[in-house]
Length: 176
Image (cartoon, rainbow, N blue to C red):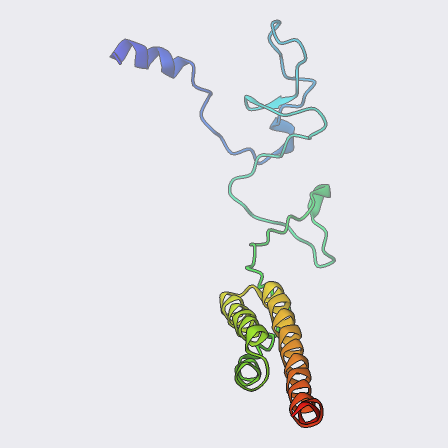
């Protein structure tokens, strides 16, 4: 950029800031001249445009709030309170780990009826794995499947053993 362009750009700058201490020196919207090309002029103060519905602020040299003891402030200005965001801890309801029924499933598999006992062991291991990953709802479902297979294993085992005893001690001696 050349020095001529710098000189031209300086003429486009607004006038230097001068602190206004007297309200009579402030320009009001009625005293400000707007260019003819501006279709809907908005009030300006010191070259700054304000949107409709907003009042121009009074010029101050620095921030010196004049707050009264009753909570208000001078000349109808309102007090602004700025709050920093605070991190919020969200505490969810902790879910208990559902029972996995592994030990009873192994005992039922060995002592009662092994085909359904193996499936009870499988569902038990899946429930434990899901619970360790934090998927408590799925772990609860698999735990219920493991419990149901455990019950089925015990019932089928008791029926199988009872049937064997009845066959060997009651029915078979009549045929020998």
